[in-house]
Each structure stands twice: as structure tokens, then as C-alpha cells.
Image (cartoon, rainbow over all chains, first blue to last red; front, side, top):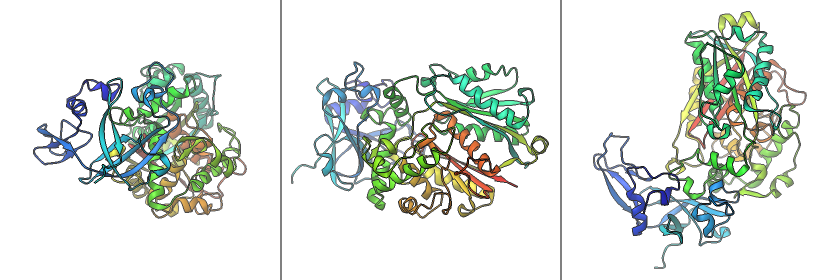
Length: 149
Length: 386
């Protein structure tokens, strides 16, 4: 899995492992070995202590929906009828539902919310961020209802 | 420190200006500002240019197109950039250039040409002003970012879609009276609420326009300002704040911390409080942004922005008239021009030269608030007439 399979535009980065993580089914963040600060989106460098000694950690569990929208007027890369269209445009989401969940450790994760009718979405509801591999092989993140107990 | 005054203002008509290129739009504004100041380009010692986007102007260093069209050689000229706050960055940089003594007369020009490419392309370019590695892959657009802010504000404070629509109704009301505005027509709340969804809960009339346009001001040192203009408008407070690139990292989606910071700096520098402001222009790129600005600038308590527009307290005659030029919503938002156009509008208001029906009576202290990106930059300036 190339990083560009997630980012659409960028391949060169020190945190390319993130995309490999999605392929393995995990969402990765980084944690500074010096000060313990967690970074999501992951960063290779800690701005607080200027260390580049980071470790990968997996993000797990449910979060609370902080906010959500559905984008009816997509950017060019997501316009379904253009050949430059990005994966989700050709997948299933229009309008594109997007939201941010806050996990128990305070980390916030953005993702698509394909499986829930928009009218049923509520700020504060429980959702789980999970990696999703698209039919064309690209990777992204979706926010899904938590598994039944 | 010596004061810095505005001695000339000019702007092009905003709109879908298929008759003019970037440099030609800028010329219209510069001509107006120099004429207003009663000086020639020979008397200008330096020039600061704001053009936000290379992509929309098809070229690197788009500012040079403007400088060259004015044959402004060989004196200092340069570009500053901060997305939709580029214009205020240019005003700030112009102020710094005068205040530092590097130049005593400075021309500040802001311009943007946005309608020569498709709406999808503009949406794409602006969407990448957010975190283009980590958020753009989710199809995020500018309306999308502000929709997330709106939804969070509605959930936390009970702000309603009707209140959002009321901001649009107000700004279109005043924009209809502004001959430089892009969309000069009144709208009804019903029309705003029934317009199509752009990014839920934001509808078409919650979104500012994609416009072409330019604005310019001439800044001068205290000594020269009084020689050229016996009643200049002074910039007495400047604040600039910065916030996270990614919305995922925001402390609180319902506040733009960069604005709170910038406002505090500007009020302190000018020695005033929010209630001293007679007229304000705020960054209403989306209706929710104006409501959040009321709160972050201290015009009302946190969470009461929706109520403030509902009670019409930001109309002329209310507590503090806001965006009586039509705002970005109706006047238009050529992104590099906007911050400079805000300085033009406040100067007009403080001089008492605004159009009939949208002049705030006896305005002496004005405020401009200009946001770059979805809150990465926020610039607040305080203006005063002696």
C-alpha cells in the first residue's frame, strides 16, 4: 500500500507506515517516546520536545461523534463524472457524509459515515473509526456503529 | 511609536468580471486609491500585494503581474499570503513597513481572479487550504469545514438554521445598497432556507460568493498623512492569531481561537473594548462564521451569536452594525482582495462616505476581522478617526 493510496496527492512522507496500517486493518497514531504526546494524524516529529523518536500505536475503541456534514458540492477530484475522480466518488457516497469522532484518549479521527442515514446522525452518538479498503485498492477510514455487545 | 494613517482608498466592482484580468482589476483599485489620496505612483515608496492563490491565477508570483502592469520599478514590492486573510496580512505588512520607517508612503493592493475556472476547480483549490494530506482525502471542501463548525455550534448552543439564514438576509439587505457588491439583491428568509444544500447544514445562501475583484489603500506615516489628507483614518490596533491546520486538532470546533487571540491583541493595542466599536466588518465566508465571529470578537457572550442576529442587534441601529457593506456573502469574496476591501469599507464608514442607507451614523471606531483558511489565521484591525 502506497501512502498516496490514502492521501490521493502525496507519496513522500516519513509516516508512510500509516497507509500500510490501514491495509492491515488498523488506524495508527504516533507517540513521542520522550514526552508521551500522542499525534493523530501521525507525525514523525514532536513539536513539543523536538524529538524524532516516535513509536506507532494503534487507535482502538469507540468514540463520540463531535460533528458531521454531508458534502453535496464535491471538489474536482471527487466529482463522479470526471476521469480524475478519487476513489470515493466512484464508490458509493454522494452526497459524501463526513464526520469527526473523539476517542476516549482525546484523539479525534475524521472519516466517512456511509452506513447510517443522515437523519439518524447525532452529535455525541457512539461510532467506531475503522479502515476500509475500496474496490480499487485504495484505503480510507469510515465511522461505523459500534459492534453489538 | 508614530501613527500610521490611511490616506487613500479604492476598489473595483466585485463580481463575475469576465471583462477583466487580475492585473486589470488591480489597476482599477489602485487608480481609485491614488486618486482618492491625491498622489501619483511616483510618491509611493513601496508596494505590498496580496494575491492568495497561484492555482487560480495560473502562475507563480501572481503579484508581479500587478506590479508590472503599474510599471512600479525599481522600488520595493512584494507579496504576502495567508489564504483568505491575505489582504489583512498585506495591510498589516504595509503598516509594519511604514511604522518601521522603511517607507513613509506604502500602497497595499489585494486582488483575486476566481471565475476563470470552474466552480469544481475553485472548490478543489480552496478545499486544499485545509490539511490537504489528512483531510482533503475525505472530500473536504470549504463549505464542508464550516458545516462541521456549524453542526457543532448548533449541537452545543442550539443555534438554528433559521438564525444562519438571518445573517444572509441582513448581508444581502446591505449588499443591495452597495454599488461595488457582487450580488445586489435582497433575499427573504424563506428563500435562504429553501435553497439547495451545499454541505449539510449549510445551504447555497449560507455560502459567500466566488468573485473577481480588487481593493487598494494608501498608507502613510503620521507626518505625511496629515500633509496629504487633513483627516486620515488611523490604524490603531492590529492583532494576528494562528490555529491548527486540521479541524481534528481544534480545541473547540465552535470557537476560532485565532480570532480570540487576534481580537485581544488588537483591543489591547488600541486601548478599547468590544463595546467601543461603532462599526465592524467580519469574515462571513459562511453565515455560521459571522455568528462565531460575534462571539469570538466579544460582541456577545459565547453561544449567543444566533440570538444576536435574531434580535437584529447587528443591523444599523442595533448594538453594533456588522457587514453593512454586504459582507463576503453579498459583496463577494475575491480572496486576496477581501482584507484590503475591509479596510476600504471601514475607512468609508469612518469618513461618513458610505452609500445612502448603509452609513452608520457618527462612526468613529471601526473593526475588521479577516480569517484565513478555516481559522488557521485570523487578523483583527482597529481603525479610528480623530
